[in-house]
Length: 440
Image 1: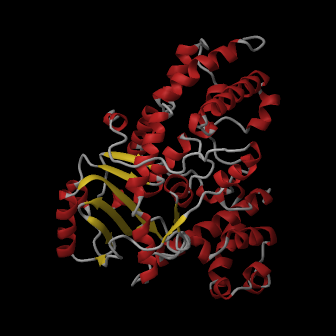
Image 2: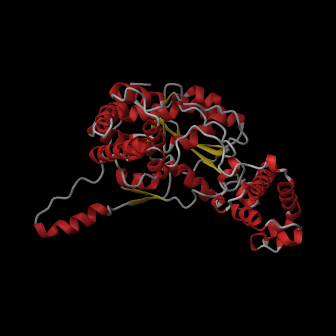
Image 3: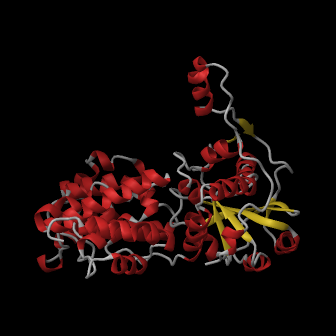
């Protein structure tokens, strides 16, 4: 962990926005409350330096690398994907801004290797919003930060009710950041000018926002918490491949027998292969609702399939033969190859709703632990899920360490990935709560 992240959090100027308004009469209180709830927001419509053109040649990239390497202070970084349009989470635009270098918009499709830019920023703090979403795609371009400040995580630790970038910018800076292009198809080429303006504005005030949030975190005594969280997100390993990812089909709970589950699996795998080959989001190739409808109806022919309302669209009808072939494969599988109705084996605890019957003592521990987390969440104005990952809490309560004391609980939390500040807050409190349970 880079402890210097917390030591130098407020590195640039900037006052906390919107100081409380003075009350001159008790009857003014409701009006003041209204003003505080909806502060005046100044729309941010144009980047200070204008909208830069998109960098898409090695020569232009070399100039950007030199400029950003010579810049000063943190660097604001953002990335745009084409979620819902393209297969996977590939990055289609990289935005950066740094004092002395201005703003750069880079096309990572034309320039897939941005490692030279990353090398020029070694030791420089990268400011991102929701870094866990952008860092995996940036890593594919060779961009890996050595320090991170995540403005979304900072907002969460400060207890802000809304943590989207526009909401946090409005709260901290009093600026209105439009988000109407957040869900567009960023694989489009050429990118429309209004989209580029939006992209440039996304990094326009990130460093200023970081300054304000850092000051607030320091005042709240949460600077070190933030430093640990930022380092955790920076160094987080990629998630392991999902076991039986087809089980994430929306509406799968409606399918209750193995044969129909086999049809779902065949349709999902066929869709995934087709979507990958065509570089299209799987949901645009065949909606989940159509997969579930086919598994429920089990059509035996293309005409029966296309008679289903979910397959009446032009896109699904065009590949009806492909889908029917997948259905036929599921219907033809021997019983020994059908998927389990219960799902794959897992070391995860059962759903908490079943605990009272399966293990009443574990259910009591979970209830007590949730009370501890809820109390600390309210006391410190931090969301419960940021105090401790819910899955880790459930695992601790379902299969607790022995002896069940503060030391073993702390060890279990650390092994599960909890940060030092979380362990310090929770271990002793959980041990006390568990010790008070009957039969402890």
